[in-house]
Image 1 (cartoon, rainbow, N blue to C red):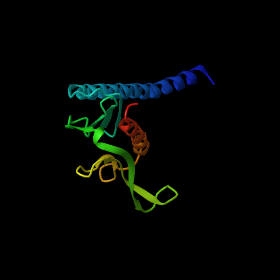
Image 2 (spheres, rainbow, N blue to C red; image 1 turned 135 degrees about the vertical axis):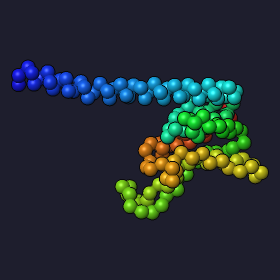
Image 3 (spheres, one colour; image 1 turned 60 degrees about the horizontal axis):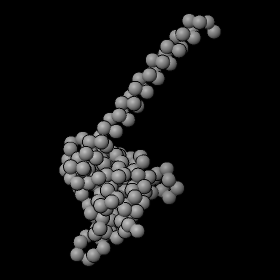
Image 4 (cartoon, rainbow, N blue to C red; image 1 turned 180 degrees about the horizontal axis):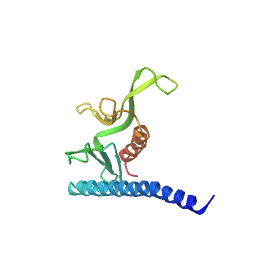
Length: 163
């Protein structure tokens, strides 16, 4: 192989890889900025976010000390956030709604919705559903199931009384 071919190959490789790394870096900085902005918005409401996550233009954060959840449905349009006090709830449960049909899974069912249900501790208030995925809005499940499982554990831990 001559020197000219080596230089052309190296130049093409750099020309294709550098933009990919620049875009990934910009996406990480944008996500960190969004989390910081939403954490600040929660702090303006008196909530000190200890754990947070962004998925599908949605945000969830929990204040473990005060046992409060802060949810932002559309982080790009600065929609109103939802604040949920966990003191009124006894448990958090992951639910998935499935529809029969062809899929790559072994059971042949297609996920329609993924959500967390906060079970109320008294009969006068109702349960609250936090949606993580809705087939009517999103095209396919990406990592929503893993995120919902993680937040099921986070919220159940936050509901436990401090010992």
